[in-house]
Length: 231
Image 1 (tube, rainbow, N blue to C red):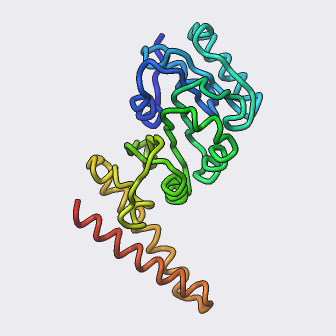
Image 2 (cartoon, rainbow, N blue to C red):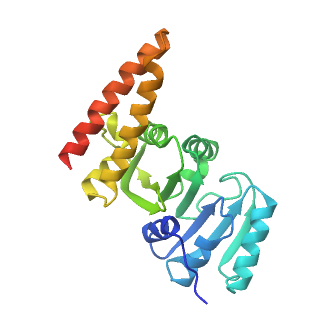
């Protein structure tokens, strides 16, 4: 019996550096930790979750696949169950960008001892990128994974300086463009659609805030179309 992963989790697994100790934060069913051990990607995995229910699900999966010697479960919020220098890679997937940021802020002492962060924010990806850029992190790689009609953004982050030439690259990661990600055109089209809809909503409003939003949306649309043209 071999663990089969969804496209999103498989893309994350493929980005994990080999032969390291890994922490999977918000592990849920521990599918990813089991896969990492099964395929000799990770040496050891700590599967952590804030809730007892998901952790019990994780423990069941680990027992089913007989990986108890390599995967340890821990209950706790964010990175608080992880000790300094205990892992080299941290995965935080399936949460909002602001929550991921808060988890990193809360445990910066642990983050400082980690080599690689693999982050998969569900929303507020632009705000997460901006925070990383302003707080001594650099995005080394970015991938898009597709499940059904949904596209997921996956960031590989290390410590260092990152130069962002334009704030549009907080919306669309520079590395995605460099990688010529297969779903990039569709991804940008989705952004254009989103900002076009926001534009329609604010156009009819007459407040100062709405006018500011209108200008912001128009500028973002212009830049998005420019990036799409260059693909």
